[in-house]
Amino acid sequence: MSELNLILLGPPGAGKGTQASRLTEDFGLPYIGTGDLLRRHVAEETDLGKQAQEQMDNGGLVADDLVIAMILEKIDEEGDDGFLLDGFPRTIPQADALAGALEKRNRRLTAALLIDAPDETVIKRLSGRRQCSDGHLYHVEFDPPKHEGRCDQDGKPLSQREDDEPEKIKKRLETYHEQTEPLKDYYEERGLLRRFDGTQDKVKVHDHIRATLATLRLEERL
Ligand SMILES: [Zn+2]
Image (cartoon, rainbow, N blue to C red):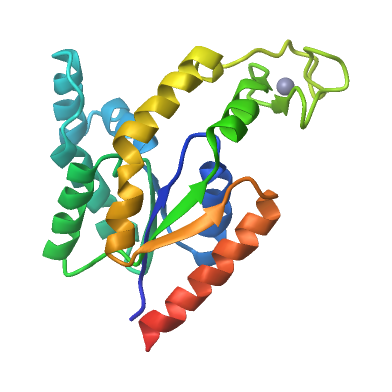
């Protein structure tokens, strides 16, 4: 049995989301985005969701073991052949906790896929993003609408997500460099890190990742 148990790493704006949706199609793996997972548990008021809500109501972050419980539940349901995890781990303690939890299920990570891009690329990409209220996306430089500030598809006004404002981007990058970037060394030391150049065209990045995963799957079978 060959599993592809994968995590996605990389700064915001490096293209993780785009690559994730292509890879889940290519390899038939469930995509586990922890942000969405958490929101769904809370919205559906599951046991785990209620505990998470309680922690947030008390002004705290949701505890790692709660997030891991949600991830494991999803893996148990759909992840027999593997999974693609995005948004977790974001710190070294989280990475340790995840490894321990997988080990209890006699599983381990196959690879950590790092889609990397320098700050200047990320800032340029994110700060130029605009969207209409229906979520149609544009970029002022790389993919501008025909009429400035208006959606091509429905004519609605385009605006910038709060998260994509320059000050917010700077904050997100700082947090990434401080807390998440050390995971590069962490997974490198464990022989799990695979690097991809997120500044390249997304088709190229996708081809590169797909080839790497095909090789990994072969190696798992041997
Ligand atoms: Zn639109």
